[in-house]
Length: 236
Length: 354
Image: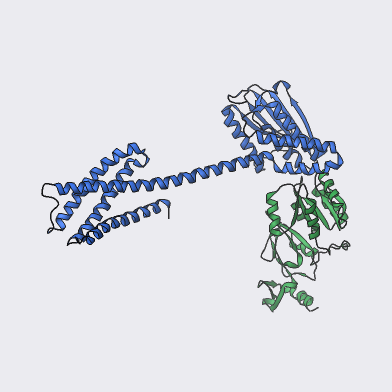
């Protein structure tokens, strides 16, 4: 598994890198001292795992993750940040406290899914199994795309609906549409994009459109323009 | 229900219950002695009403005069006088009602007045007993309330101490420093040893200064240097420090941890928050009105942009005001593309300070 260490302190990066030598399954492929550097390295090196310091000059760890389309596995590393630690607990994200306890590091590494393929194909498209990082105010989530049933445009923001959550994130529905797998996510109308795996019922609607029912009971209107494409997709 | 309303409810319940119990005991006693004759029930009711009215009157007098606050030696003569007067009133009331409502019975007014006097004495004793119970209850409630209050105060002051200690420790700095030292143990063992000594000095200082009002400037500067040396281990070339301190001022008393707080702020905003790092300049000079301590860092100050610093500066201001009153001042300003935090304070040796 290819890992990238992101921390503004050289000694902190070195310390973690030393500790990781005991773990063969984790290969440290690079280091970054701030979010800008990290973003570049992530593009170049395509790591499967980030060790991410939260407090960094410029953009912090959360802001870095929000900027990534596709979030790799992340283990947060922080010295002391009660608020952030609370945020992790809610979402069961893993974090390490500095100075890092080697036993806790091992635990965190063992918790990572074994199947994390180190030979991920080079691709721009996001698949249903990929996870994304979302941050709305103080709260943050790692969510698998297959759990997202609906994206809704609200001005410059997009509301993401999954389980009982609905964070609002600064992205545009059009850019999202270009990155998401078109066989899974379908642009039902100008404002909404649905996950086809969540569709349970379809009925004809006014003026040639369709009314689609999701397994949660929510309904989404498919515009007349999109209805033909929709039928085509589902008849496959 | 409010506390006041619930007290009132307790009062009336006890009043009604107490007087009903009082007259029933007498009723039962005379019934046992087979003296329960005609008019006994009416007499009991009259007694109960008179008891209620007069004891309530007594309470009203005590409350209006504020007797709850009196010490016991001052209370006893006043209470005796009031009980005697109201007791006499009670006897007259009882006798009047009795004689009017029960014309067949032997009149209390009449004869040589000994029957009336007997009633009076009885009422005075009953009212004194009533007051005893009333005050016992009052003291009980009050002592419980005092106890609760002192417990709360104690908890609050403990919390303050804890918050103060925690802020002095600066956990973010401490744990980062410990993490860096862990890495240094392999890379530069000598430096690691020095860092542990410095960290110990800072911890010891943070714990001991809680009690002191001022410390010599030299001592405070040593702490600041130890702190900056540790931060230098973390930030390396990103942190650049310079000093301009008049050596003649090293014995001047200053509030402990004040310069330290200013320097921590400067590092947080001028260095840690900037990817390329920054400079921190510490200057202490003799000014026109006393000591001028200034800490300069790279960056720009925007009021209200950072809550943490706002509180830190506010606390420092309050401490200065407590020690020096109006004679000390803390200013923060942008000057030549840098942020300057400046404290101007009088040079004094404070009584009772070592």
